[in-house]
Amino acid sequence: MWDQAERSQTCQATAGPDELRRVNELLQQENAKLKRQARDVAEANAHAAELMVQREEAEDQLRRAYDEMEARVRERTAELTAVNDELAKEIRERQGIEQTLRENEQRLNTVLHDILTGVLIVDAETREITDVNPHAAEIIGLPGEEIIGKICHKFVCPAEQGSCPIADLHQTVDQSERVLLRADGRRAPILKTVTSAQWQGHRYFIESFIDMSERKQGEEDLKESLSLLEATLESTADGILVVSCDGTIKNVNRKFKDLWRIPDDLLASAHCHQALPFMLGQLKEPDSFVARINELMNRPDQESFDTVELLDGRVFERCSKPHVVGDAIVGRVWSFRDVTEQHHALQKQEALMRQVAAVNEELTHFAYIVSHDLKAPLRGIKLLTEWLCTDYGDKLGDDAKQQLDLLQSRVGRMHNLIEGILQYSRVGRVKEDRVRIDLNVLMDNIVDAIAPPEHVRISIQGPLPTIIAEKTRVSQVFQNLITNAVKYMDKPQGQITVTCVEDGNAWKFSVTDNGPGIEEKYFERIFRIFQTLAPRDEFESTGVGLTLVKKIVELYGGKVWVESVVGQGSTFHFTLPKQSSAAGSQPAADQDEDTEGNMTAS
Image (cartoon, rainbow, N blue to C red; front, side, top):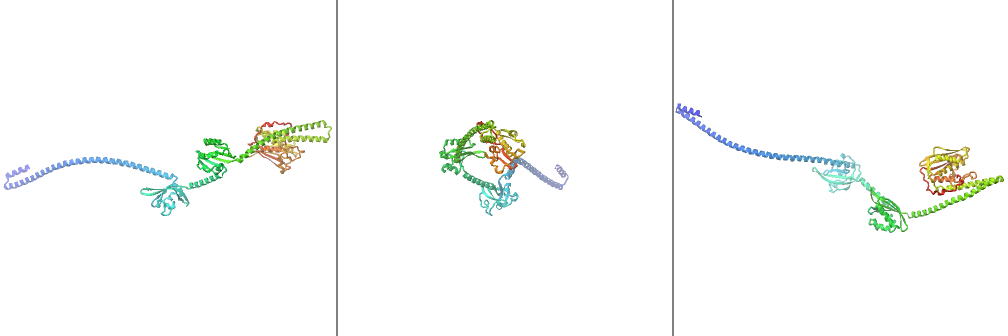
């Protein structure tokens, strides 16, 4: 600008007026331009200053906005953090709920699979079966996949269209007895419960049921058993009374009422304390009856069996046993039986037995006295005949000698007969100690004592057993059988064989000979006392030997019999139980007997 002024001044100095005007105009224009520029600059500066102010204001506003934004960001961040924490917590809770739901679903599936209750889930709108558990499928009789999708009331629940008790008739089914159709067409009684449930906005019916077939059959069987028990209770010959531990009468039959002649009203109270005084008034010994009751009540596991006598002469057998249910004693069962006739008969029998025992005792003494008194004159007669033969033998004729020999024979026979009767009477009365007997040794002694003639051979086949018995009795059995076989042997070479075999719980002995044999019609007769088949003058025999064998064998619980073929021989069989039990023992004092001149009874 200074250059322009200088140039203007220079031009004014050198230029003319026109030029000066022009220069002034130019200068004025320049000045005006400069003023405008200065004004513009001033405006610009003012505007710049204004802008600076606005800038500062804007910066202040921006700072305030930034601060506010920063505060809002911090606040929002805090809010987002809190929301995020809440969201994370909610996610965790949701995950826990989902895990719980999965566990509950698994537990529910396990329960539905394992429970013994059939379960059907039915769509409330379509009536279709949407799920079924294994037990329900088992009861229905089809796999689950063949059940799902079927219409419930057409498939397993017999109901007409529109008549479903739950969906159509709006009935409540809770522990109700209903009917279920099986796959094979049979109808099964069930105990059924139906509940309604919402699931994912949809309504379902949950039907649970239990098969009542076995229970129904059990109830029928129980009714039949109770009916049979009631009939048995009423038809029994015993009066039955069942009471609980506290004395409550649980059951009583008509026979009990009849035996005790007790009115029904005394039993109506259902407590035995009402009926007991009435019963005690009929007894001979009521105190003993009460004492026994108290003893059994204090010892509930004890059993009792005895008799009670009534004032009218009747006698009852009384039996009492604990009433046990499971492992617990819940009461007591009393039974009474009228045994008046048996009791009186037993009393008579005992009196008769005492009389028989007394008679037997008298007979025993009589037998000993008679045997002693009979043997004494027999010995005298025998001695006199021997003296006659000795002193007058040379003076007697042949007939007289024959008669004396016959007399001596008759005396010997009479002596043996008396001895046989004594032995027979002793069997079963006079007992000796039982000992172990080796029959092999015993048989050797018996054979030596018999001393068979040379033409008779006695053999023992196989080892004989060792038994426990009375040695004298067993010896008598074998000795009598073998002696008879030797006595009646009619063959030039006689053979007698003794054998033994096991016969169940007994030993079976056999004595076989090849003698004359016995006709079958005499098989029973030969075991009777005093019975002989051969003339007594031909064979000396008392007819007691086989009878004695039979009595001894039967005393030990065995039996004896004979098998024989005439002309070929006989076999006498007898058995002795391995665990034999003879009759009760008798005092052994009677064994002290005059045995002088004893002979083997045969």
